Length: 623
Image 1 (cartoon, rainbow, N blue to C red):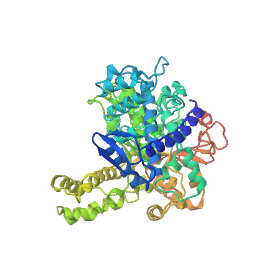
Image 2: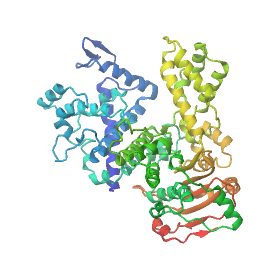
Image 3: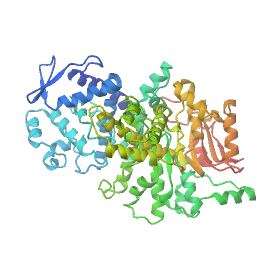
Image 4: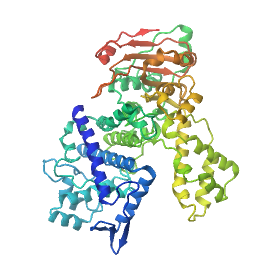
């Protein structure tokens, strides 16, 4: 994989897309939050003040949607959001066309014969029904030489056609995005033509390319935030916490947690031969070994293994877990076409505060499923991955939700109290993220309250927004709470490395109250989350400072007293591969959530240049 080429393209594309989208906004008379030209419908056209041109009648509604988002989120923030949405879409389409995953079989962005026109534009007659194309419009534009305009229309119809199987990237409700596509797409140096310069082999290798492109795309913002030394907010947290985990470390964590569950149940499994990063259990004293044998997984069904990645990023870790689970299902005799569906339905959960990352993680898992089952997009097989963008309660808080609930006069005081608990729990969820500890076990009262609102509330001009957007937010918060309250067999992650001193006050207060032993940094707090069930596994890579600093003494004691370390790789510096280099000192480990005073296996690789090779040679010591 040519990571330098990926880095060069992603950083260029970000700047270019944001510039082009700002140009498109200004063309629509939207110059800033406070400088927006009036628009009106005249006959069959939309007219914008000060603009001599006229536009289709539907521009007015689409433009109004864009303005509403800008007023709510800010001009620059929306430019950034629209840019990454189109970046994600184009990268996804490139991956799908190279792998021949598009249902109609034609390439959308390129042509296999190297022609100027993408295949989809040369074959509109064959796909007009699938994409719901106005074939006369396409032919007319092409006859006039307006190739880019014809392509923009067909491209957007392709995006709409993918909304059923890839709603996270191609949401049909975002029709206003059509207005913001750059005018030039196929001619000259555009974010599409430059993407074609990247070798196809990089996209054919694996879905990992998606994660690298995303990390490089946000790298400049990450550098800028760190350089500013400003307080980390919900808008900057995603950029400063993304660090792509090396593939071999992902395999080490996965094989020694998910793989260990399998080998405890089936010691003679042929899968063991494929797990070259698996570390054999150390020999224990007889009484300790008896205790460990008693808690081992036995006769496990692959459908019952539950894994959560609470900082899933673009899904790199989940993708490898998918591959390992697939082998487990195969070994137990499941039909190959059913396995991807079962994995997404039963096994994997991902959380992330970053909408972009959550979108790409979902996409990556769907691509893995489609690769294993060419019929996966059919209704009989398709399952949407359980990847959740962690949202906060702003929609409800900004809409005076409590008064809205009272005004409905259909809920009991207890039901309102429970909804208030839900909203307050997620008030600062965008910065606290999956560190939120949800201890509630019964959500029945909230579920019934939402059903009551949906079935009995009478809509009027005062509550219409609450009954649409507000209730939608409530339902999502409820599903989010349920996922975060569950217990899992394995939690596996590369968490954010962010000192709490740089965070906003609500996050600091929460950390001090809920994570007193690890409050100094987010990476350490993730070691004390409640996601792992008794006797389950915690697999992580994080900064090694928790092993030495006095501020983490209580954390270390807690681990020793309540859990045991199965194995650990002390990596030190330069474990991560990146274009810009990194200086974090890291360690990766697998901890079992069981208070047994047992020995573990430890590898010291801090002085090794090729850490993977040194690990594979062996030489770990027991302690």
